Length: 322
Image (cartoon, rainbow, N blue to C red; front, side, top):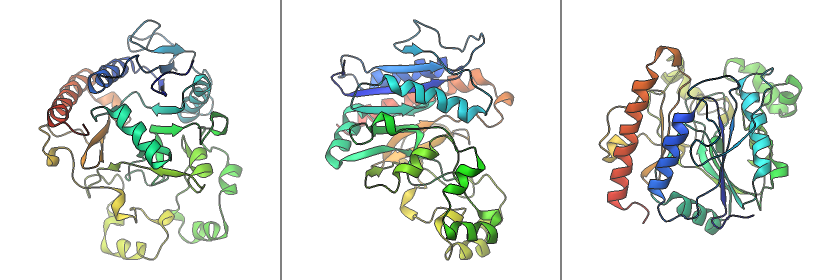
């Protein structure tokens, strides 16, 4: 049955129970008018036993079987489960959401869906952060991707990464092959989860839009400092975007983070990513892939709870998007 709010959330979890529960509580707090609740479909891809594994009956989620195919790596494991999950969606709009991506706008369900309808957007969501120079730019990524399934039917979506050399080479035109030889160290060929969606739809006659990532140099640069030097920046004036370490579209990101916008929060861990829409916090991606084993997960989670509470208190009091 189609739900009255016309949205279904789909999430692939891998021992993300605490994030899912906090994320759901944040959704309810920021969207108090939305009843009945939005369907939230989850697959738990961790097959072993863990206190952090989501189980049936925990939270307001519909839990579906995960993927057991780990032979091609984590990205493929994630995408196969996601491809299976979206087959159960019956609403017009789909939100593909990482369990550790927190949407921070008051009434974001109504606000985003209204915006998509009015602007006739097929896709809306955050792009890959610019620090990931090997991934595609300026198009929504699977961390937080709204899709209008009337324009983009489920049958046309395939989130699997491009892992075969033959698949990658098919995406290259003559200039690409020339550029790969001449600027081998700069060559960027998107392959990760969602790249098939990007390749199919980013150049189609469909509209899409992205909130802005907060990107500040040199703090957010993950590689060596060479590409930030004057010589490299001059060269990038003459190279196409696909061969540049830094985004050529200056309006595709912002340097002003949440704290500088007046939100009273402590300094965030460097892997976490902030996104802004219409000058207000849109989302926070709590990246956990950097030295995760060396971090105190419990302390970091409690720190996150305080950050989320502070931001949501501020945006609710300010009446953002009301």
